[in-house]
Image 1 (cartoon, rainbow, N blue to C red):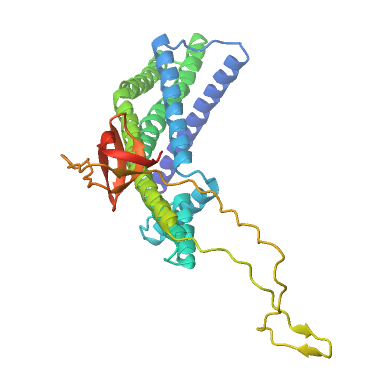
Image 2: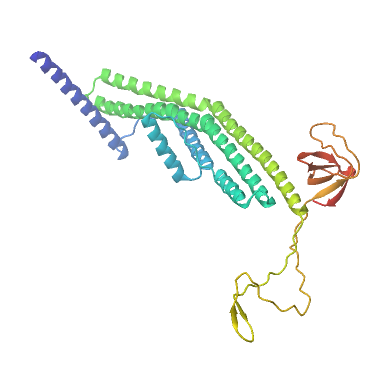
Length: 375
């Protein structure tokens, strides 16, 4: 047993000395090249060009990922907090999904609470509630965009950069550079007769093996550009869907606000009258009487006519009146009856309007109506 332990210790010492000697030779070769005393083995030009393209492509992918994440979640402090909470949740064994607090949702919540404080009888409150609901829907659409891009664009690209570039290509290139230094050092030592030809051939084979692995990884990475372009196309598709849904939501909100403005215009306006002052003291010729705060002081009649109150100018809601009956031929057109009042939304062209009546929205011909308040 003691002989076996001595034998293992001797082998370990020789291996440790051999490794130290090899690292010392690599260091000597590296310093000699830096100081210009020796020149290392030349690398193939195609390999160098593939190396440049691979590094530039990986850097571009990292920049895209970082900027897209900044676009989806612009607050870096909140992002760091969510990342910490997600790490803590994984450590506890819970897979709770942490959602980024969208600013659209915060605006929607404020508008909804404010509308409830005003009351449902107010047209302004109903408009604020509709606007708040619209912002809440925009927040839901933004959450969906965030989830889709992260799962189908950011995460796959991060996985590609990690596995194909960092763990594979960079690792083989690092090993190749280390073996090149060892090979070049043994060339110089072979010329001095300190290294055998077998040791030199072994170092050369290892150097070429690492170069082949690194070259194959870079070629595969470069040739997978079609896959990376499809990932960009998916990103554009998600963005397009997000903007289409947002436009539809905003169109609905605009229509609701126009209806609320029309209702507010039709409401009767109360006449503004001056309010008499309330006094707690009434003076007389004989005594001073303390009166109740609810008893108004007698005021002198005005000597002249009161100045008229100027009404605040408001822009009338664009509207028109149907001159004839119009029967819709498809779901996008709007049925009209003679004398119907229609809220105008926009003029599509010289022959068609888009409008709304009684919650129904659609298109109708311009020659069937008479404009009351133009767009």
